[in-house]
Amino acid sequence: MSAEYKFKRILLKLSGEALMGENEFGIDPEILKIIATEIVGLQRQGVQVGLVIGGGNIFRGAGLAEGGIDRTRADQMGMLATVMNSLAMQDQCIKLGADCMVLSALSLDQACESYSAQRARNHLDKGRIVIMAAGSGNPYFTTDTAASLRALEIHADLLLKGTKVDGVYDSDPHKNPQAKRYDRISYADAIRNELAVMDLTALVLCRENGMPMQVYNLFEAGKLSAIISGQSTGTCLD
Image (cartoon, rainbow, N blue to C red; front, side):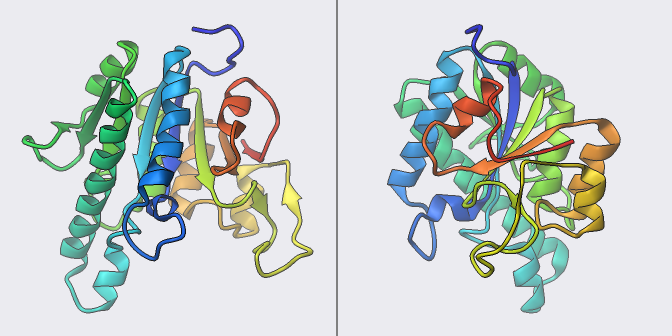
């Protein structure tokens, strides 16, 4: 592994919406390629990369439930949406020459391997990018919570959340031009102030288990590599 990198193993959480680009639905191939190129670049430098991708660009379980579908069934549909995104990312990583595996919390043997923490760690140790799909496999839990859980299970050094803004703010910077960005904030303060970083369960899980998190702008080139190198960018939570 290159000596310039501070973190050996990371878990990157991406929202499904991040893959849409300027579209209103689905996956933008160019955005997919941009994200995959940066991830593969890190993998080639010896960084062990795990991914959790949401499914909001295709389905949202909670939204379907509000429309009258049984919540458990709706959440399972949302999990399948994350599998679609994960397979798309795997395909792009492979096209870029990387070894990439999708492990699913739902049993989908013809499309991907079943998830286990040991299997994920083994693949990472062998230098493969590992995409962990289908959330936690349980209804009522978001992919934010799944990302926190998976980061702990694979013994990640850092959990990263790629967003459309450059960190955590005290209010929505798109609506409030005076919004304040935090360089660093404790999980306790993020929870107390109800900041929209991740859902409450995810934040508590990270806080109780000492998992540091970095929130950064996914679409600013080089930011991910800068964070892995130990540079301060975005917002750090600990």
